[in-house]
Structures are given as structure tokens and as C-alpha cells.
Image (cartoon, rainbow, N blue to C red; front, side, top):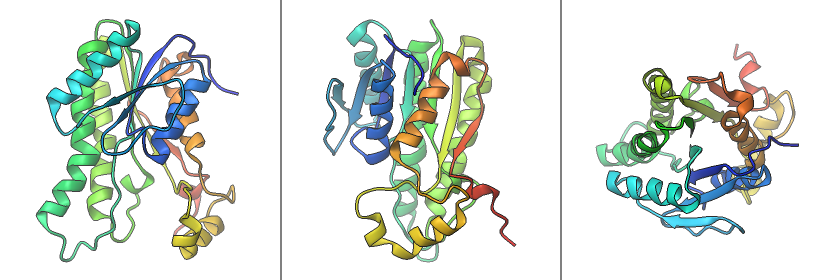
Length: 241
């Protein structure tokens, strides 16, 4: 079951990645026309408009948004999924390593938001950032990632405050551990610990994240803005002492 977004046009950045592809699929299942952004990877999705752009370039973001809006003559929602998650201890981390993660996970979403609002401010619409539960609960080796995701949550709240007058809603979705091919093989201890900690007893899926994004972009969420929707199977409810 999903919301009905028939006829809506939705731009999903980072749609060549696992979560981004899942988000794009769920919007398509809800009847939306999906513009799937990619940069280095390739989009393996049917019935979407695939557009390549470098989101680090603010002019590239503007062109991407304008092409997405011109495709069907409208733009209703943007989901910022593009991001990276390298592991690097804070001790010894270089400034270049820090900037690479912050720029990809935070500044690119800023660029896309600025570009999207220039289109959405006339008709209203929805912008959703993919943040993370690490925005409030950091993991070892993820100081740059957790800091960027925490800032992304606050960026969405600030944008919700300032762009609400245009009818533009801005929210975040914070996933927990999302399954991907090979994850259990590559990180068996982490997957086991997650299963033990999650009240629902499983990992998340890209579809779980996509469904949360579809909801936030739908009329069912028309009075929701500045909100961080945590999708973690209940891990955040687990006591840490």
C-alpha cells in the first residue's frame, strides 16, 4: 500500500545508490513521474528520466532542477539522497577527508534545496533530505559523517522555517541500518548486533526509506514540516545504559 501521487513529478538525487534507487522505485509505485539523478554511477530503473549532474556545482543543480521541471511542466517534490559514508577514525583525519564528506552529505543538499525552492516557491511542494540516526547517535569512525547528518537535520528545520511562507515543506528521514547486497558478509558482527538491538528484529530496506519519503511528499503530510522522521526499526528506543 502506498500514497497516490499520480501525475506528480519527483526528483530523486543519488538514485544510482541503494537507498536512492529504493526511494525512486517507491515514488514510481505511487504513480509519480520520477527524475532519477546520477553522477558517477548508472541508474538501473525503468520508466524514469535519468539525468546526470555534479551536485557540488550550484549551477549544475539549477540545470538539473530546471530540466526536471521542464520534463512534464511541473515539479512537486525533491528527495536529496546523494551521499557517502566512509569510515575513518577522527584521530588522523585530514581536513580534505572531512571536507569531502561534509560537502557531499551537506553542501550538495544545500545546493539542491536552493535550486528547488526557486521552482517550488510559486506552487509549493516538498523537499526531503536523507539524514541518519547518526545525526543524533554517532558511531566510531563516522565523526565527519555524523556531523554532516546532524547539520543536515538542522538545515531542513531552518529551511522549513524560512520557506514555509512559500508553501514549501522541508523534512528529513533518518534511516537506521539499511540492508544492501553483501552487508551480512562484510559486517557480520554489526548486522548481528543490529538484529539484537532492533525491537522489530530486522534491518531496514531501501523500500522502507522510500515509503517514508513518499508519505512526507504526499498530501497526507501537508501539515508536516521541519520534522525528522526516524526509520530505524525502534533502535532509538533501546536503552543505552
